[in-house]
Image (cartoon, rainbow, N blue to C red; front, side):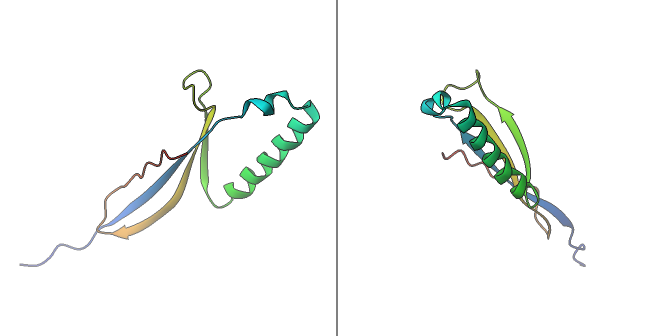
Length: 91
């Protein structure tokens, strides 16, 4: 009996990152907040060159977080493996 040929499957790993904006940040001067927003945005833009990301606002949906970043950290073809999703809810 002959073995069937191996099939390549795409394997994806996702990382969920949850963020809560600390209360003290909301009371900073507007210029300081704008500077920090730009710095955060630059870090995200730099990492988006390597990692596919999606962003979700959770304000009003969860009391313990304000937003979430979903990052696809690995996407490759692997022989003989099915589709995987790894959940990481650690904060």
